[in-house]
Image (cartoon, rainbow, N blue to C red; front, side, top):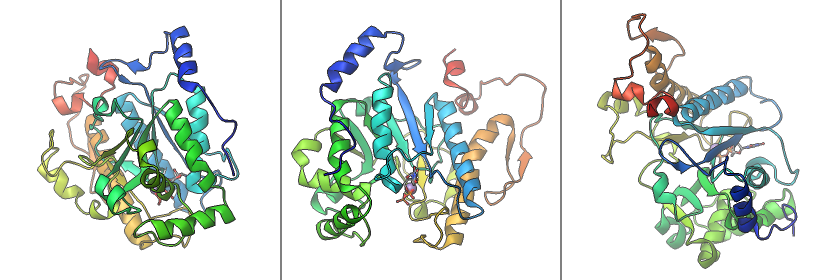
Length: 343
Ligand code: UDP
Ligand code: MN
C-alpha cells in the first residue's frame, strides 16, 4: 500500500536527544510556559479560478496572522503539493510529517483550514487540559463511537503533538488517501461504515473517524474530543449571530453565548467552481461578516471599526489623543503582543 515515506522509528528518543542538546529551543515558551505551537495552514498552488477567491484567501490569512500575533504563535503557510498522491484535503498529512521532523522544538502543531476564520481574537486555548493527549479535535465521543457519525469530529482545526504516536497516526491514515481508485474505494467503504456519509472520494476526516472507531484501543486514549468551546464552529449557525454576540459583549467564562473561537466555512469552496454545497451568496456574505467581526476586534485597538459587518469601510471610534496607548483598558491591553503584556 501507499506510504508517506520511510518508516520512522524511535522518534521520541531522537527528539528528546535533540532537545537535550539544544536547550536554547525549549518546547515551552514564556510568559505562561505553554507548549511551543506552530499554526499550520495552506492552500492550493494554483490561483483560484474564481476572481474573488484569492482575495478571500488573503483575508482569511490576514485573520490568522492577527490571531497568531495576539497570542504569540508562529505560523506556517504552505502552497506546495509535497506529494502528488496526497492532493486536496490530504495535503496536510505529508506537510505535518515533514514539519514534525524539521521542527523538533515545536511541541504542538495546530492545523487550521484556509476557510476557517478566528472569530474570538482573545481566546487562549486551555493548553493544560491537553497535556495528556496527542490529538485534540472538536467533536463528541458519543457521535464518534456510538453513532459513527462522519461529522462526529472535524479536521478543519485540530492540535497534534510532535511525537512518534502522531507519526504513526499519519502513517495509518495515509494508505486511505492516494488519489484515484484507492481514494475512491475508501470513499465507498466510509459510506458503508459511517453514518450520514454522502458518497464521494475518501477524505481525511472520515478516515480518522474510521480509524478511531475500528481501532479505538490503539488511538482512542490519546485523542481528546473538545466540545466546551468552538475549536471548530460550523459557519451556518454562527454568521447571522455576530451582531447579537457583540451587543451582549464577550463573556470571559463558560457562560452560554461564548463567542465562537473558529467559524469554519465547511462546504463553501470559493476556489472550486460548482463545488459549493451551499448557495455561493450565503457563503460569501457569511465570510464577509466573519472577517469583519474578527477584524473589528483588532481594529478597536487602533481606534477603528467597520461601519457594518457587511462592508469593508471603516470609521474612527476613538479620538486621537497623541498619547501612546495606555493599555490599562483590560481588553485592549490583551490585544497587545504577549511580550508587552507580560511586562
Ligand atoms: N488545502 C491545501 N491545498 C489544497 C487544497 C486544500 O492546503 O490544494 C487545505 C486548505 O487549507 C483547505 C483544507 O485543505 O482549507 C481542507 O479543504 P476544504 O476547506 O476545502 O474542505 P472542507 O473544510 O470544506 O471540508
Ligand atoms: Mn475547510
